[in-house]
Length: 380
Image (tube, rainbow, N blue to C red; front, side, top):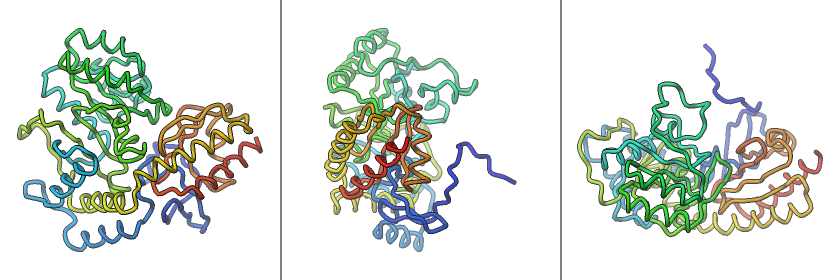
């Protein structure tokens, strides 16, 4: 039997990691500016993280959600406190797609409506409702295409208000900084206007913080830069630093109804140990603040490089979520960065490098990346 590969693979077998570095099976070291697709938040193999998971593995990795799990309660309290959402409830699941799927279901249960508004170029996952709200027809199977979703331009408030005024919109779902869509950023005026319109017309406002959240933007959630407070917030990726985990933060106006939502593996003991370790390191090492400061430094260095490097057309982003627009195909640059300069980055569209490092990235490592990128672009 062979693997059913769903991605084209780079010919590198990564076997070890530490901080912002990973190593392949031949002992070659790589600088990781990709973070396993924005998943690694506190760094690879952080000692406290390893210790917490090892200890929990020796006690109880899993038991059913039909009994009390005090680790879940502790996580909810800690996450509420550090994020500023201590009056919300937390529903724990396993992946970002699940988180958005459950956000959309909760919204529909709440107001009984079916229609969703989403941003053009959005990506919200590959499960049934989440993929409908993803602006990529290539990954929407015929069984998923139920015409529930209308896609509208980012920051065109008038277009959103016109749709909301029809009175049939269940929910508006928004990435405040788009990831796959190309590091496009919502403005405060748009976000605040959308929140007001949702309230006026009875729609639910959902912020997808799966990639842009959990400290990556330099605030705990990216929407906190915009002065809004959504009804539902989806989180995943960085919450478990590589252990599969996700959650939905739920406004106090939603009340649980037994049977509407459920999960077998969500919030299991081992996952909660991972998430608690992440919050420990966030607080002890001030990683949200580091994402803001080091991100500002890296963006400034990239814009300096842009002045002398004609292949860079634009640099945009916030914190440690950065897009580098090129005048050449990103796949060629990524390949040279990996094979020649031993550095991982992500991508968005055909000509954008996406930089999503662990939040422990140092300014020295940022400078190292600038040098490696300059080497590649100078050889084109």
